[in-house]
Every structure is written in structure tokens, then in C-alpha cells.
Image (cartoon, rainbow, N blue to C red; front, side):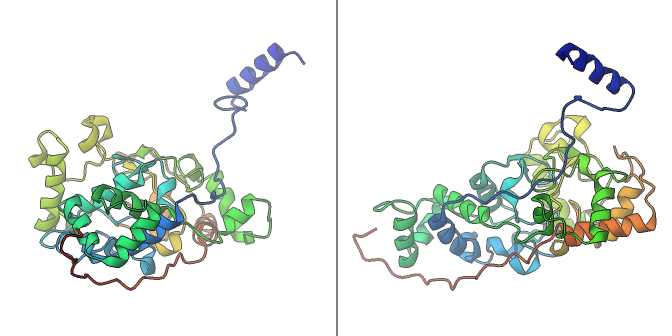
Length: 364
């Protein structure tokens, strides 16, 4: 068959509704998780920094405070804690596979290829860890073990540097990835990796549920921003500390008329495009067994609530359509998401923190 004939046939099929989009384009689907790539020596030093409370302004919080391995590398709460005397207004997302995302943060404001910037944002923001990079480097210099590890991980003769601390913690985050996940084995050809019910759920996921249109790729996220109409978490506005943090975020983002806001506007605070009001980044669907509660504001405690929400077509102003799933289809989808997409718990040994030591005069 001539190429022009193939093209005309593809066009006819598209018009007939038998082929959608590009005639030869592959439909979106999940993909196996790639092998993580990171600097092992820097990741090892980053493991110490990640659990060290001296990485926060008041030396009371560590990265692990909101990203606890025992709680799915989140904090297990609907809304995250904030720096002392403040509270946060969004859920603390898991950092499992975080560096494989296209965008960081619920409003998508950070590039997913730059883990160091993600760490810098969280460490230096006043409402999270409130840390100054210059103070961080001086604290690291006061720990002989850190100085020695730095010489190996970064460069011999190099002094600890605040900006590089962010990148080193970022290297550790790159190492926090899903482990022994059934869907990865299944996608690589092991037909027995998923149970019969999980396979049925995968069919719902790709078919009637159309979850795959937004939840695809290695982490199960298209990296885009969507409006699904998740109801507001009343605790944000009922708690003055959370409301203050939200309004401060709007103010520092340059959002117009921010003092009149009474809802989480999502990406709009960053883009200033009214079409982005209520839009949030598509989250990963890996390791859901360990990462409840769900959504950007933790409004759903269980996956059943999430599935029911999507089955209804989302909330007010949602871009979603009702699914009308049967009870058996919902159960199968739940089994796939919990058992098929979740592997072994992602654990790591929490290091014993080395102590400060007085430095010798003239060797600073």
C-alpha cells in the first residue's frame, strides 16, 4: 500500500472515530520506573543532612519532619506542619520518586529537573524551615565528620558551601524511589505480577475510568495542572496560622488582590492567569498504600473517597466527567492502585547525628 493511501486511510479512521489523535501515536500508559541515577557519595552525605534538625533555622526541624519514611515520606496529616509559630495550608506530598516528576510543588511552580532548587525552596522559606544558606554552611563546618565527608563527596580541600548543601540533599532525594512494585514487573512482561482483580482494575484504569489520560508515565503523572474541584479544606481558613501562611504565599508570589482570597487558588498565584484558578499538579499514583491522606489539601482520608470523587466527575468547576463505575469496577480499581502500584515500604537507616566540635583557631 502506498504511503499516501495509508495516510488517507488513517484520516478516514480518525473521522470515523476509530482512531483518535495522531493515527500512529501510542496511547498514554504507565511505564516501568527507570533505575535511579545519583551521586552515591553525595547522597550518603545528603542522608545525614536530610535527618539533621540543624538544617532548619531554629535547629528543631529536619526535612524528615514533614517527609518521614515511616509515613510514606510524608507526614501522614491532611495539612502539613509549618515552621514554629506558623502552620501550612497544603498537604505534604511524598518525596518517593519526586525527582522523576516534570514539576515540583502542588502549584507546579518549580522545574522537576532541579532537585537542589526544590530543597532550597523548602529550607529557606520562612513558613517551612526558615534557614539561611550561610548559617547552614557554618553549622556544617562545626561538625568534623561532615567536613571529612564533604571532602570525599564534593572535592578535596573544598569548604562546605550553603548552596551546594541544597544539591547534596537533592542527591539523596533522587535515591528515594519505589521498590519491588508489581506494575513494573507486569509492564516488563511478568503476567503473574498482578492479581486477577488488579488486572481488572488496570483495565478500568486505562478504559472506562480513563485515569491514564492524566496518570501516565513512570510515576503515573502527566506533569500538568488540572482543575478537579476538590472541596476546600475548612481548616485552612478556620486556623488563623494557616490562613496567614496562605496569604503570605499569595503576597510573595505577586498575586493581585490577594487579601480578598478565601480559597486555595492553586497555580493562579504563580501564573496570574485566571484560567489557572483551582488548578493543581497531577500527583504520582505510586505507593498510594503508604501516602494517605490524598489530594493537595488532604481532604480524602481513603482511596475509596478519591475513587468516588472521580466517579462523580469531581467537584465544582471540574474539568472531569462522571464515570458511572459499578461497585465491582471501583473495587478492582482500588486493588490495582493499592496493590499493583505499591511496592515494598521505602525505608532507609536514620543516621546518628555527629556532634558539633570546637574548631581550632586559625583553621576556619
